[in-house]
Image (cartoon, rainbow, N blue to C red; front, side, top):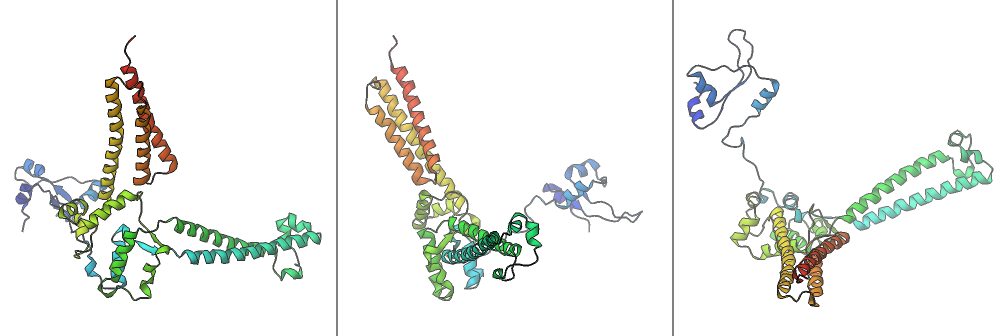
Length: 370
């Protein structure tokens, strides 16, 4: 049966024809793509499209119809996983705030101390070899690595181990120690979980009679040793405040703005809510921007009113109008963001400079002409 080309053209779709054998040469012909314009120009006759290049053919194979995706995006639900490690694993990975794990700080410290002691003993042995060669006037072995590697015998106190062999053992231990030290530093740099995130994971693990046995779930009670894998953006007090408000005020309007359709399909549990971190970040940015604009416009408006009254030149309150907003501006940045000290200093200096420049311009405009 011939395909319904007319119906597809009325929908604005193209017609894709797979490769077929040529009736004369019996060789496969290239795939063709016929749109509405090509068929309309043929006036009822079959239109033949010339051979395409390999790039065009590859594009045609990846062409999708205009009516939508080939398949539906699959989002797994929490209820699909059985209780235990499968369900807990999905829950911890379902949101950035729930990725809480132990860093085993005491274990890493113990391993570092052990490696440190091993290297110290090897270092002392190497130092003793050097001093022995110096005392026995075997300085040539200290001045040439080749002679030291080819020496015939070693002193009895070295227990049959040459200096190059000791250096190989020392190198291996030193590299292991360095790798372990850097890994411990990376783990130490991770942020600890907030009280709210820890409480959320703890409540989930204790609900329904517990997700794990007592021994396996003991890690969640080691709060001082837990770290959060929350990535990216500087998570500050304002972000935490917004999430707390969303948790307490579970109205439909807030859920519409801060919960995406994909997040709603993750679970059917009404007590679990997945708020979109990107939307919370945008809300935080808007609040901080509005506060900065208010802190910038209010002192400028006050200075402008004083300039209109003609009292800006001899008014001692002008200094306070500049200092107080600058302090408030610095406090807002330090509280609501994770700005570093040099960034905080630069932003406060720039804010104060804007007010001083405006004050100078208004003061000159307020002075009567001579």
